[in-house]
Image (cartoon, rainbow, N blue to C red; front, top):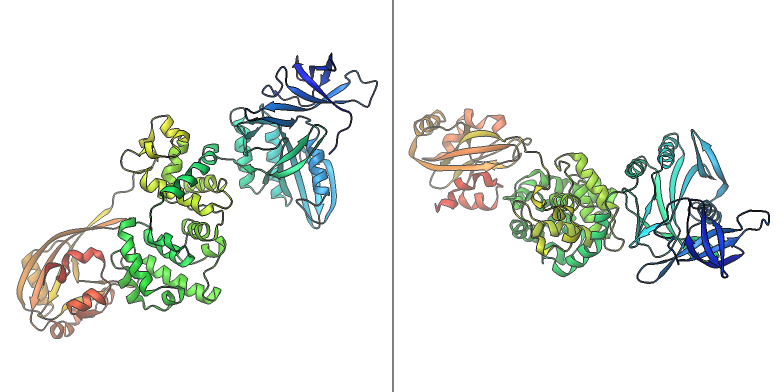
Length: 593
């Protein structure tokens, strides 16, 4: 878009919204101000402005304000202030083949409902409304809109949502009327209702775009995309220092040494509910035996569970195998490389899909775990309960919109790493070591330990159990648990509900056709699951001819819900049968027998 008849002047004052005074060629001239916003940060006495002479000699006000030079402290920035130009430059840009292909119609000021949208476009079968907003408010490279409350702007957003529901495509196009800015964000200081309406519109499917402009004294045209931050400018400001910190301080972890999808996937599943240091030996052992998807898909379940033994949450291992089979069948054994395909795999949720797709493929998707929830809730001083699914979704949106192109993996890992070693739970965070403490609202308010907010979990159910370790000189009795439910498909020592006295244990043995040679109390143990705690006591029952006597007793062997009885030597218990860590205290080899 080109202007004609442009002259340079010096701004003097602005007595009202519509006119200003300027010095032009040594004379004081009255200037018409098209932009009725406040613009106080731009129109300062002595500022260089550019004005256009009217081509209507009968007009009372001869000049229109077009642009102003702003001193940024690092140089001059030329800002176009013509509030009537954004619609025209967007239309011109679309007509040049940008944004949509096969445009058959484009027209201004089209009515829908109770609003008139700035542009209406038809492209093939697509019908599109575009609301254009010119942006001149800038500070420290951050652009904001509006510079004053605008109920009309909120109404337009609500109408765009309605248009979207009725089958139209809908866009909000922020024209940043300058160059060299960092990002755009709605102005929550002047009009929080507009910011909230913009977020609602985005959630409803309205596309939110921002582009800067190439601005000269006598021209303006659409330039390059500008990042849009609808949720947290603090998170946006944290991106660069976090990535730099991570690259300099990341821990040396085995799954980071060779960043391929299979290895990241295995490590992320193992790390769920399990500490990093505890996972390392399991990860190395697992990858040594099952180095790729094919090996995982083909491994027998008992062997898989044995490799997983000690990590707990055994359905994770089963889901790994199912997903590996899915990859073999649906993707020819090649790990999928899109977020949506990774998310479709068995046992993979948004966190793991985000981790694999961003760490390995550089896809700009969030990976929000407990560490990230804690870090973000502190940076933003967000008091929403992180146990609520809606809070996680909000944080995912907050993170996703600021993920930097080209550094998606490093940024996601920086948040996780910060939460793991600096912004720690259960005690004082190490704010002195934090690269973003200057951006952290909780730190600014001295309330770091108040975040994150998490509703107290329901108390776990307590179950008392008696573990019976039946042994003879060679073997120990174990049985397989049912295929569904807690510790499904794992092996266990026989057990009974409640805490039995020694005499009751002897009677139970006799009822099974066994004659105890010696009964020894093994002591107490506790194992915690997510919703239940086992409080256990144990007995070792030494008998003669264990296998023959128990096999002859159908009351013990034939209980289908208890699974089949097996008789294992110490080496088999250690190497063959997957035993949950719940029974570690009662393993014979653990007592030197």
